[in-house]
Length: 165
Image (tube, rainbow, N blue to C red; front, side, top):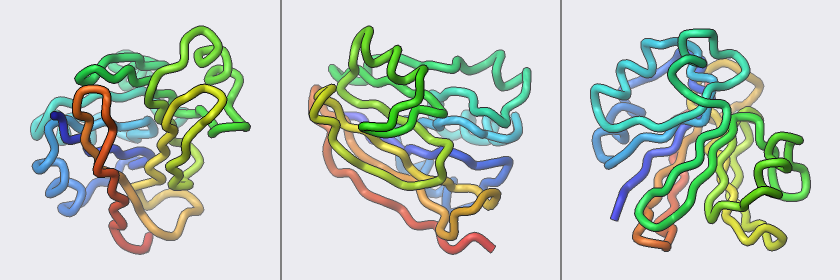
C-alpha cells in the first residue's frame, strides 16, 4: 500500500501545509510547473519524488524530469503529462500516448482546475490536483492525496490549502 501526495502548478511556491502533508505520504508526485529547482530539492528531502516538467519549467528541471512519465506503482500503471487535458478533451500528446497504451491512472496538471473523473472510453481514472501555488487564475489552492493498494486506487481526498492571496 502506497500513500501518494499529488500536486501540480506550485509555480515556485511551497508552504508548511504542503510540507506537512508531504511528510505523511510515502511518495510525492508533482505534475509540472514546479517553477524552481528549490521546490524539487525541498520535496526530495522529505520523500521520493516523481514528476514531469511543465511549460514554465526551465532547462534544469527539464533535464531532471520527462515530459511524459509512465511508471508502475504497486500493480497500477500510471501516466503523467503536464498538459494532458481531460476525458473527451485530451491534448494531442495525451491522445497519442493513450492510443498507444492507456494506463489505469492518468494524471495531468496545467489547467489549475481540480478534477477527478473516470474515462469510460479508455477505462482509466483521470486526476488533476489543481494548483497548490499562488500564480494563476485559480482562487483556491488545492492538491490531492490517495492510496494505491495493488491494482486498487482508493481513499482519494481533496485538500484545500486556502485561498490564493
